[in-house]
Image (cartoon, rainbow, N blue to C red):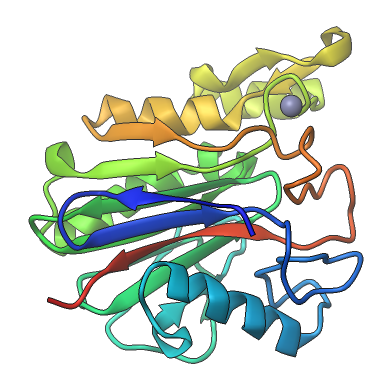
Length: 243
Ligand SMILES: [Zn+2]
């Protein structure tokens, strides 16, 4: 398993992992973190347990969600065993919890204001960019006491603007709201650079943002739904550590 990891200030740890190594068999090999793609639940659980340990939490304190490409945010107050349903973002201010976001082309975002002790994760595809799921998540963090100009973000791997060609109608639909997403894909077709749109949205709010890992479509070490419709999900986690 290749992990990139760091901190967003004292007591806020984050990590992204790729698909290399893990318990899942093809086509979910090997590090699939998603429980909704048809993989063996025991394999997913083993991969999640290992990933949780990377940020210093137990499996029972790793909270996931079941995204629906909307812009609703789930506030997490306790460890919960199942995924938080029908949300594309999670926030918490409970020490000892870690939040998981999984993706395969969509943009995973990890957020934290370590002074306030508030962390969040976001899953943003083209619908999420259009409906400003990043903005609604920042609002939810502010409601929990975070200061957005103090909040930091890390943005994980996603399909790039060269590889993500779309129909003109979708291009117009998304770029009308998020002009930074505008791209020209291979072959000259309309393209969307969702990471550019997410980064612009964060930086526009004053959130210090860094990017990690590359294009999911181009890298065999990452899952890509567009390349392989039946596949797993890599992911990222952010943890607000117990004192
Ligand atoms: Zn690409």
